[in-house]
Image (cartoon, rainbow, N blue to C red):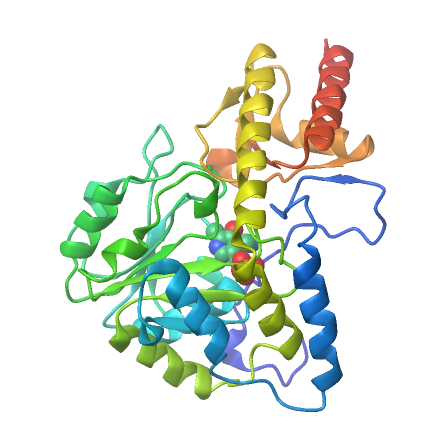
Length: 354
Ligand code: PMP
């Protein structure tokens, strides 16, 4: 830290992203990326738009925002497009949290929430997940704080039903309830349809996972026109040109080829079911996941050792050094071939462990 760094950030511990090795030696199952490249139309659209890089992009991303609105059956005024869902989430902390509206989220969830809270000087509390790793819905009802819930949750993969989201939104009328649906396309129900009824509900989604565009950085928020206008105020006060031309063009082409991404999601669901079946045969505990990853533990090997031995053998999975979950590892669901390599490597490690 230099002597110039502002005191307000002195206690800030930044988010630790998953490892991104520079070589492709690894079977990479640690950052919940899609194993499938985007479709040809997306690649072509991005390449063609590069010819206009001398011009700033459209800050409103109008055709893209309209396409998202159409895809989800909401109005254009209900959509804000941002640089990944991380940016939408940060804007939500900026717009809807302060000392009178502290943030609240589960104790085990996306590790960026406490970082955004600290970055923005927002007080926050964490509500423990229940023993079965489900979100304690009753504890969020009437909590009177700005709520952040990932649904499905990360890193557990466990999802809440929509009736639970509705209860939380209804019981906190004076606070915004943010539902982070980064992983919703892999089998869970989206709360977008509730945003018409609940003006305090903001749904955050991304092109990173189900649409194979993590490298493009594209996300969006859907909510009442008032919430979206507030987020636009924050966006236009930080970086109106937050999405580059190539990403805007790629996003539009992706929505025009929605069937391609949705078919990939169905393939991930099949690979998830296959992997879970095989892991259960090996005696693993696997939390019920509706995401493109699973959260697993075994009595035969501790979480950290499994992560390290997998890495030695060329398979990257994600381990979290956090008390309640240090016995677990999060494994992204990749192609069938990748999951077979993962399972073969795991079997070898278990044999070596006996
Ligand atoms: N929310 C959750 C729960 C996530 O796991 C992630 C991915 N790290 C994000 C949001 C951020 O995704 P994006 O790439 O859209 O910024």
